[in-house]
Length: 227
Image (cartoon, rainbow, N blue to C red):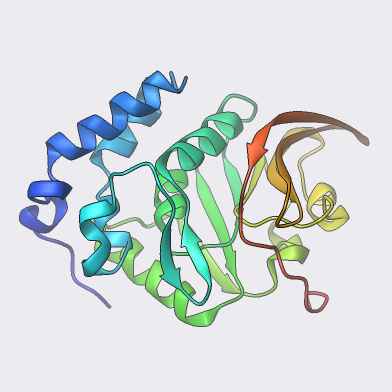
């Protein structure tokens, strides 16, 4: 198990320093992110540790970064926006994340949630995400290597589901796993030419869908039904 990180690793230097992080936070505020507790969490989370060392100097730019296996770490605005949308609509006691990726979104969600259940189909990415959580002493995340299209039904229902890859339509399996007491699904939907970020809210057996804004994510690949 990885050891906890030291202060120098957490704080960063140069392009990964507190000044670089503050510039990122100022950009997020300028783009309409006004959830100050969330902004404080983002400012204190060492984003540079979630990418390869060669890309660390770009970690606090507002751009998506490659993490291997054809996957990306979403830009800081997207992470903040999706988390803020979930937080504004649900209690966040039980949260399902579809696509652990580098673990960055996972760690942000863990700091605003009771428990995060995170599904990732690529085992090596899941292992790295889990290692980073341990290194940052994040203890309230449960990981599973599986096809995220089918969610994690046995642990539901969830107050919020945050999906970090785009299916062509909203998966019924994810809607079914929302809490009927106002559970929300934050999900990009579309193909690689056009996607929209949606917020789907469940009340009882009814669902309300809101079109939030344009999005661009890697595809959500469905391979087989979850066991």
